[in-house]
Image (tube, one colour):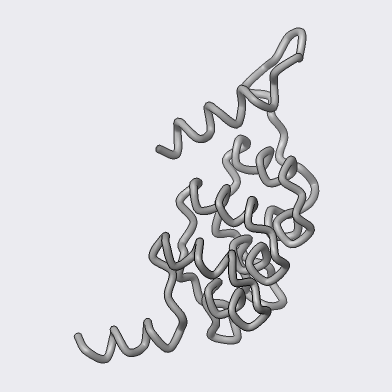
Length: 132
């Protein structure tokens, strides 16, 4: 699935180029999480094609690209990151999952997308772990 996604993304990015060099796709200077925060789909796509780890986190909050896209209300970026097999239940330094971030900021559409893809709140994860 991830290979298919990367192939599709690479084809979309390289369409119209006279002499594309698939092995020469540079990693953008903007971190993937910052591109997700800004809603910059093109930069997120370029990162994924270049092989950037989708769950890369920022140093200040320990938030992944999925956390940032959820916080900032970018459902298209959330879906893209999930398609790249991001950890839907990653925990940031504040103990929050992307679903916590979406619900805390009233991002209901994103919360529904995360739930559909197995997203849980930190409390739900703790309750599930306690049952084991």
